[in-house]
Image (cartoon, rainbow, N blue to C red; front, side, top):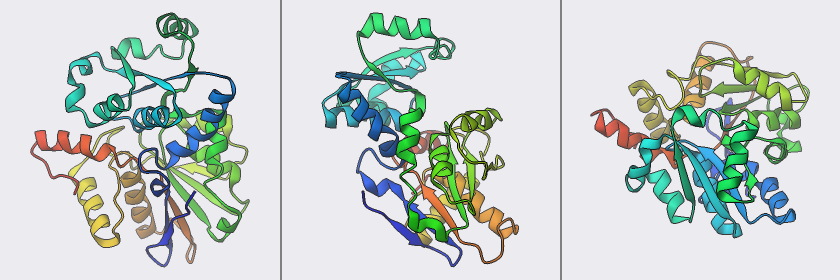
Length: 292
């Protein structure tokens, strides 16, 4: 993989993980790496996973299946989306990659981790390699541990956005003892602490939950303006679900004196840029400023 780490301020560096692959970029490439190896070694021919309307994970699994010759099945949250695939950039991309969809209500979708639910999916689709929503499992953590290198000991803080907790767990496990890992959740709620604790082997981490902007997939005009200014100033695009919120948080905390004086901060850009188009569709419908 290509390492793309750039200094954008005296104190701030950014690792552009999304440049590692044109379609399966950032943390999704890391999370899928060892899962795909395991699926092939175990002679699976199909991958099944879960996600919402603009899921980076759904798009990544669909393309990975096409690239590595797996059939792919996406269980999609929201039965109303079934007739809206062509107008949805994420789902239409996944469909073009050959992904088969199963749409279901949000109520039914909440049962997705129940053994009886998975048994029903096997009855419908046959044998498949199961990837959890967001892709986080032990093999995904192993892949995310490779984001950091031994040369990264120069950084005092490692920051990343948090969805299901897999990426930050990998960063924690491969960090150096003197480093602090800071996660910026895209969702409301305290459940992520327990999820991360299942996989993390160190305790040098913290979640800062003040920058979710109302919750998952919620976007404000203030956030959009920040994302557009950041791209104009540094020529680095940010997605509004994950990396935009993280960088907004880092800049705000820096201005408030959160980081030790003279410290060096490494921000992990985990990709997710395919989601910009879908968010812009919503913003345009609401006659609000767009991400450029």
